[in-house]
Length: 78
Image 1 (cartoon, rainbow, N blue to C red):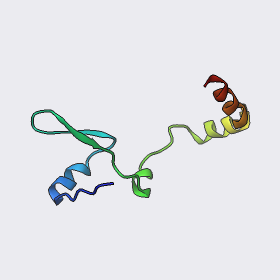
Image 2: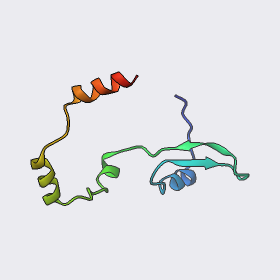
Image 3: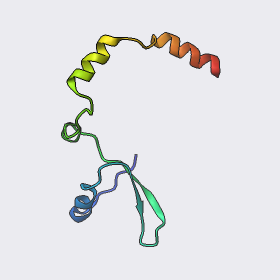
Image 4: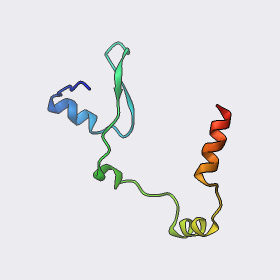
């Protein structure tokens, strides 16, 4: 992978980016894409939208299928 070193002003602009972002030049041409690094600090800012009660209810409810069954079905499709 190549490495590109940026000046502090550009880094400060990238720090405001929340998710994957297109990078374009002044003419609107796509230059590339940027995806912010995932760090413990950035992950900690997100909260699960489900309440503790809902998470407990779902864990008690059970259901689903074994992974082996899912993989077997996918193999049959290809």
